[in-house]
Length: 87
Image (cartoon, rainbow, N blue to C red; front, side, top):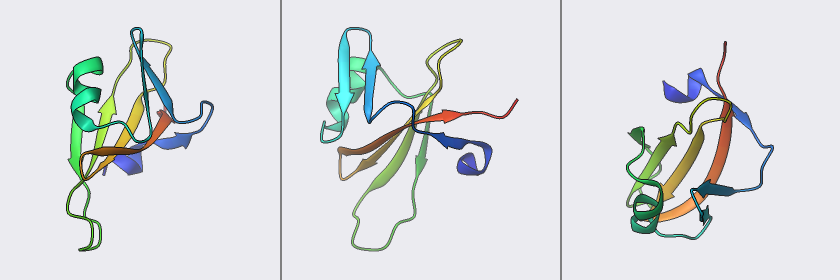
């Protein structure tokens, strides 16, 4: 349902800034929480059986900044996307 409400926006290439820290593909989920705090929203993804764990984390970053969606697979950042929410 979350994905139906957002449209992908790829203005930035797979890097998220949290204060003075950068998050990118390959970082582990614990370092994301350590650097960015708890996500605004978490959603479990029903992927094929060969994935043991997949989640989508949303970070609302404040006014004038697109929210970030981080896909976590097996405890590792697989992708980061910035989304443009409908008005």
